[in-house]
Image: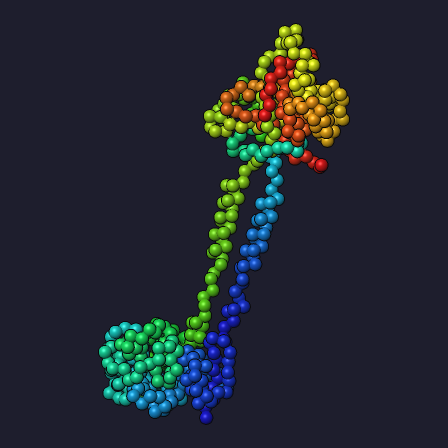
Length: 138
Length: 361
């Protein structure tokens, strides 16, 4: 008589555990962009999908009150002038990326931010969004 | 008196020490199936199918009109089959094809052979239409059933029938034991040792497992599931930025204060809740200082709205005000549902009184 029965591993519990892990991972994903600048916290924010937005980074100025670097992309793109940025946003709108996410560091002067916003707002069809992060507490 | 060990293939039990008569009666009742395994008690004989191993009962025990093809009487001899048994066995093997049996025997076994040969031959007696015919001691070749058109699944018929042709059986591996002790009948020249071995070799242990339900191999399914999961993880997950909608700022270039003087601060204050933030981060709502934290600002804005009914916040910030202060003010306004308006501050000097435009959300 063979002992075949003892060798069969029941896969059902293993699959269940895998599904548990997967569910946990799914729910533990945070809805925050991977910030390379320290964007200010805000309670109210809406999620904007990366694939439908042009990301512009305003990095912290080297000196207080200095000029911030304006980068196209999330902290890793080329530094462009405002005119080039505007062209890039216009290009994005043409490719159905009508949102602009402004990842501005919290220390960037407000005037600089508004300057960029004002410039980009001239592009038809573009909506400006200021990138924020979840508040630490409260 | 012979005693037998029976291995039941459905419950996987072994019953030991059953007498031949007991075995036959159990067979007749259906407790023992013809494909259960049997061997002599106390021996290490290989297990063989009951229907093939059990000595045949007397022909008169069954219905007399049945032509009893003698089941192969292997039990009595460690060696081969008698000529009639072999003929019967071969006729059973011929079951699956419609050819005539290779060796028609002019012996008492000829009657069943004739039945195999001819589908229209009359049946001795109507066989029970169950999948487990009780009189397994008198097995009929299944071809005779076809003539009666019984709704029986051929594969379920076990009375002494091997479902395969002799050539398909794994003969060589099991044969050695038979070869070692051929028994007294090996001298019969009509017996082909190879056939005997094959017949004996067909009774392997695995026959008992034939009725087990096949287990589904889940490994492949799990692999596919993982593939799907990975695919959806990669394609569905994308970076989501948490953002705050901001309105477009006042587009008009700041003009000298004189020409904008038409709207004084009082006018503005009638229409908007004025929030001013200086580079240090201190906040004034309607020219009244407020603690620079979120909760206080929200409370103050709420009070301002309720007392005067203004629905829009005018955020005036110095050029060097830090971005996070203005974001906090935006956040506070959104908390209580105020619309937001903000001018474009000038780098040089204090911002002039802006031409207010409701550019709320």
